[in-house]
Image 1 (cartoon, rainbow, N blue to C red):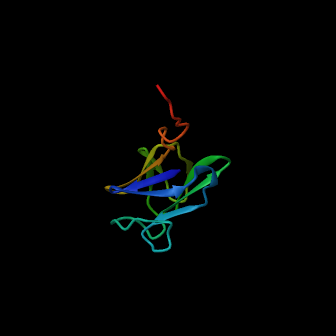
Image 2: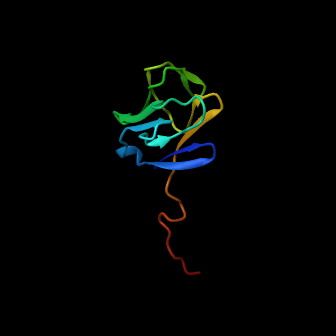
Image 3: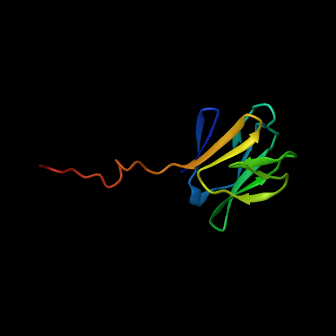
Amino acid sequence: MLTAAVNGQARHLGKLNRLRPIYIGSGVKNTLRVTEKGVSDRHLCLYQKAGKLMLQNLSTKPVAIDGRPVEPKAKRSVALPAVIELAENVKLRLAVLQPSESTVGERSENP
């Protein structure tokens, strides 16, 4: 499960292997709405291509993935976990949430 956290708020975005395009920005029609100052109406898009998580910068300003800039309209692959800087002091943390090991393969044992 792909998760995103912005300013302490986490949200599940879907299964990584079945990911549909995820639009992020300040507009109401985005999959993930981020209303902080400096975030465009439709800031970026996350999508899957050939089994890789990709990002397209839809903003007119650069964004950064783990400190590496992504120029406007450019596309880059994203290695998880990742921190995407949308604007000054606005960071989106992406990670894959694994099923809890305590619930997978759990069995009862008698001493």
